[in-house]
Length: 418
Image 1: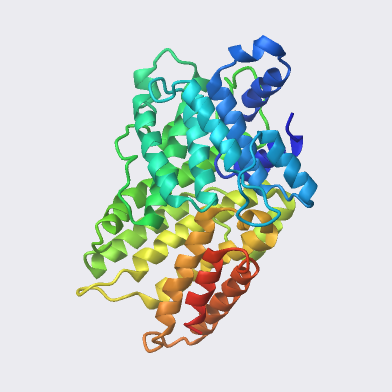
Image 2: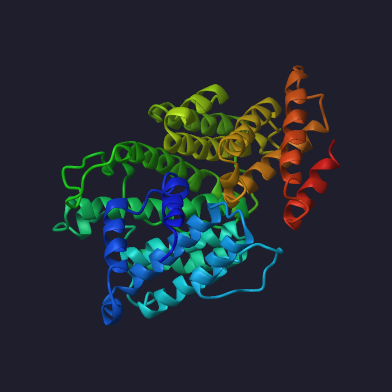
């Protein structure tokens, strides 16, 4: 039986920012599974086993294994030992391979289920975190088709009128997870969004737990709904106003007026973020993390995505539109600072999340390019702050540059601007 630490770490590090698996229901099924003996195990839904494997794999990415013996034990539990890319480190692709095998046993390509879609979302994130972005993109394509096949993109009140309120809520949460993954992955890769055809509305996801599948309501469930709705609204705006343009390498904004309108749309969404999410200052986040680490993680992820996309709007440039230098540097600073805060407060997690790392590098690169020409801004203090951000992100990357070729390359690229 795997270490409880691995399962707990999933709910500590992953579940707060991607709350698509109902914890109490999962733990009930999880404990039931490990209580089975012999032939009883063969009767368990293979999609559940796939979900268990990938959740444990995700949790293990965030667990600090302090000794080679513990790392070896972790690898032995999953039953495979791949050649190690770094001496003394576990290659965690084994449990994901086992998860995929379980999906195959469940005939996931022809019989999509809620659990199989949940497992596929997590496999995609795992591949990203393991620096296999191309594999993740390809697998995400299958995931989107399966989500459509299951009807997750449809309003469950319309297609499943007899379903329980709890079931409809879980379908909405899962569709949001698929939509969110697709939207912000395509922003990074400059590829076309695919989770685009839907009539599911974020307003229908409510903090109503009168039907909670017979489970006790835990304190964070209501806050999770508000976080999900905030990310959902942001993803809707980004999907239609940024993703298609970046995938076709065309301007995000056609004119200064268009840019002002789009910035106003971002501000309107920001104004709808409920407490504590609009409080993105360093002191606010630090205070929040001392009281509620789950909400602190959510605030950092929301801030990173929001200000990264706002920075892209401000940095847009073509023949009829010049860069909004101050707007770009301001948004870029807040976006990068969310990564710094994640690194300060949850250092091990900051080293794992692919999205966060890549956004931070992209933001630093755009800021570094603007630092070349200081004539556009009278307030030179902005440039001093920008330079300090570049220096700090280089120092963070250097912590892992000897073992990570990607980090080393990024250090070399950013250092040329200083």
